Length: 311
Image 1: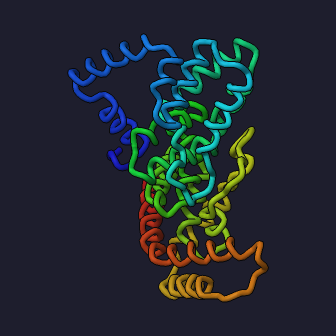
Image 2: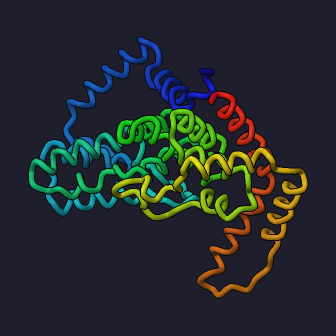
């Protein structure tokens, strides 16, 4: 199996190299960590110059058992304030979901639970969709080490086959991470995940409602219990039929799909004010998708052909 067919393995390997560094740097960092560990949370708070440093200092105070319940609730609100399921990210998006503040917050959650306050523990990011959206943000912003931290968690929760499907499903909802999402779905499909395979087939038909469904960004946590309950279903018969139809796609059908996208992206309407922003965002998304549609279709077709040849 080639290296490109193992995106998660590659991502984690690269992240490992980034995080490990050379031995001298590790020693310096370890010495610095020991020095910081000797400083109390109150001392860190006094030295803090911004909200990020104050958050870390308050987490340390919490870990030391010196934070009151109201202060812990405020810490939870701060941690959650930077998470979003939307794609219009602000400058502070996911700032508290980086490795350092996340680890600090979760240590605080464990301490708070021992002391009788379960709120931090109950607000840790453990839902599959949230984990995948957090990883998507970091990969979209070219921070693979941070992204791999969350992908690893998703794999630990769901296993590699299903974890890659969840990540791929979320990644293809953003134009910046569609290529990575296709590779994740491909690897999941190779491991036997039928949902991932059907989504790959669906990406080949950008004019369909199914394509619009799987590439539209979702804001809700539809993964509270079992992700596969809400994920697209695929049985063997439907899968075989979809694969046959995809392979028989003609040039005329491709032109028709492109024309459909153009017509949709140029369609004028007068929606009510509550609908205006959503409609404009949808039209802008369709316009961007049009430029990448053919490239995406070809990539998905090649991957499906490889899968069929390996049967």
